[in-house]
Length: 149
Image (tube, rainbow, N blue to C red):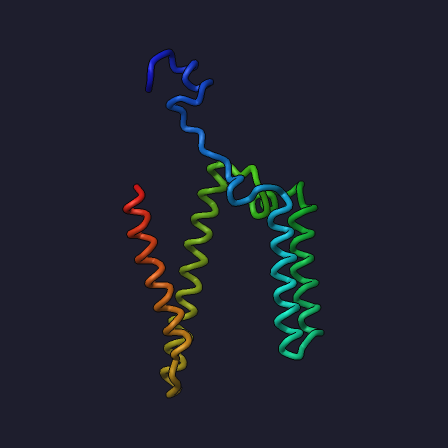
C-alpha cells in the first residue's frame, strides 16, 4: 500500500481490491435484450432466405421472448446476472465456471458425434474441424492470458 492509513487509501481507491464493473461488456440493461432481438433477426433472415419463413418467425419470437424475460425479469437475481450490468465478483466467478462447464459439455458432444460418424463409415469432418478450432482457440487463449499476466 502507498502512504496514508488504510481507510484513506480505500476511500481513494488506492491499493483496494475493487474490480472494474463490467460496463465495457454490458453497457446497460438493454444490451442483452437488444442482442437477443438481433440474433432473432439473423435467424429470421437466414430461415427466410432458406425458404422457411415460418420457422424463422418462431425463432425470432423465441429470442424476442428471451430478450423480454431478461429486460423485465428484474426481480430474479439469476436473470439479472445473466442479462445485465452490475454483476459483482461472485457473478464473474459463476460466469467463468458456467462457461468452462458449457465448453466441456460441447466438447464431449463433439467427440461423441465425431466418433459416431467414424464408426458408421462417414467422414466426421465437420466435427473434427470444430474440435480443431476449439483446440487452437484454447492454445491461443492460454498463450495470450499467460503473456498478459
